Amino acid sequence: MAETARTSDKTSATETTSATGKTSATEETPGSGNGGVWRTRAVVRRSTRAWRVRGSAAVVAVLVLAVLLVPPFAQLDQQAVDLTAKLRPPSWEHPFGTDDVGRDLLLRCVYGLRVSLLVGVVAAVVSTVVGTAVGALAGALGGWTDRLLMRLVDVFASVPHLLLGIFIVAMFRPGVWPVVVSVALTHWLSTARIVRAEVLSLRSRPYVDAAISGGASRRRVAVRHLLPGVLPQAGLAAVLMVPHAVWHESALSFLGLGLPTHQASLGTLVQSARGSLLAGDWWPTLFPGLCAVVATLAIAGLAGAWRERLNPRRRSELML
Image 1 (cartoon, rainbow, N blue to C red):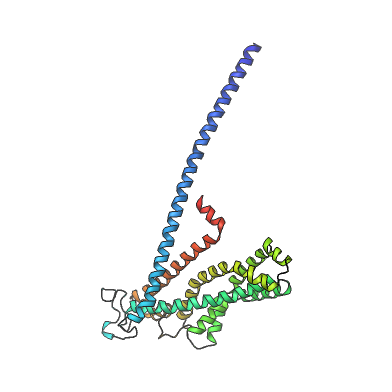
Image 2 (spheres, rainbow, N blue to C red):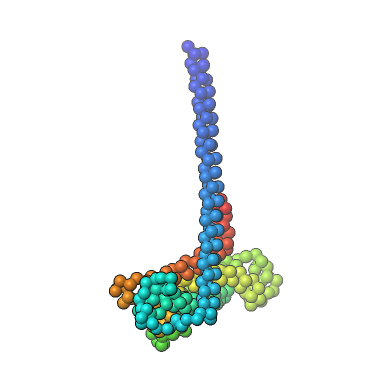
């Protein structure tokens, strides 16, 4: 009886081992299949990302060529009034239709996009310069300078951007430069924080410690080692700021506080088309708003690709 029990125990152990081996082998098969699925998904993600970047670049190129080439070579005056052709729907003659005084909306959208992009780019550059200077000084000097500048950032951040922008624009007459100043003075905070964090990270690098130990002055360390390290982040912040600045200008102009109503911009075009929209004419409002959405999404797509190139961890995740 004892021998029979030992034989049965050995047989059950052998069956258990073989079953375990089959189970592990069975479990490994889905793993390899999941690896293939992951590789396929990674290829799809890289392909989608590549097409998104190419599409964004193509849209930005078309918009830049339109705003640079159409106004000098256009034979039509964007302010030309034709009351016999007012509020005509989109057609071959007027692809975007006409407004309430008969002006061609396609031409006015090009001029409006030109002004809005000019305001956005200039405001983004100015805000990036201010934010980079504040962040670099706070991170490089440290101590009470860092605390003072960061408290200044907190004070500006405690006030809503749009409310502070309205207050700044209200002190001047409507025009391009008050809007640029308003956007620049309300959008440098995030850049200052990013640059400060990058400077603090660079200060802890071994080559910076070696330069300081070798007798390099604080100015030389800042110019030769810290500033080149923060320039890519500052450039990315400037590109990301352009869509935000365009929408900020459009919001101020829509409220009647930005550009004057006779000057075409995406905000003033939408603002002047409110009456037409209430009357059932949709195209004077749709096409300027669509231009703003397409332009900002294209610029944001390029900025996202740039951000992924600057972030090695994100790039390695895309390669999995």
